[in-house]
Figure 1 (cartoon, each protein chain N blue to C red):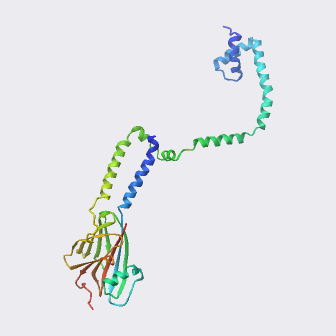
Figure 2: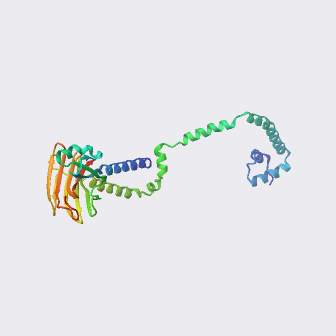
Figure 3: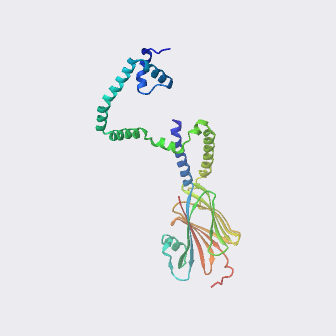
Length: 170
Length: 147
């Protein structure tokens, strides 16, 4: 079946830009061998491109593309800059934990441990205001004396120890 | 939102935990002093307790044998080597309430307790444990706390 110009012409621009598929390319090239009108249309496109190519290239050379790219790059970096908590999050990257919800028992365990630790550390003891400094005293071998002085703020516990073995008393 | 809130929350928990641990710590200073009537003078490092020693005892010479600063945690036993081999002092923080730390002190001589006591220390108060002999002198342990 012969392809009509109307059905080929809509692919002609794509063919010119090399954007057609292999099957379409074969159809167009077959048609172009027989159709002078379509060949002329294709030639016109080529001439037009040649006409435009020179001034466009000249204009492009005058443009300062590195400077433009620098601006674009800077803009990209500004948009990509993460906030501090986002950075911190990326450091730890615990997203998988959230997805799997395994953090729930882990967090619960941590809270329980924290609670137990706090109970031990902040174990309430009765107020000692005004109580004596020495709460308990025992010496199975020596006599002991306790002297509590408020001024200076000193408590003395004195052991009446016998002479040391192996030492010569003066 | 939850994902973003997690690291600061974790950080806050860790800060609170470390603060609680730090708050549960008691810095205890133990100085072993040799007191005798042989010679005269006081060790320059004992200037801060000179007045207390002078008002309580009649020794003529005070010499610093050892100065230890311990960071005690609740129920942590710390053993200090005594002035003679076979002599130890064991210090344990057994309680902490606001500005009062409760310490258990054992003075051990050749495996036997010669003193077993529990004292309550507040900042600014010093407990002097004296009497163990060292030749012609006696040893006085000055115990104070800071927290």
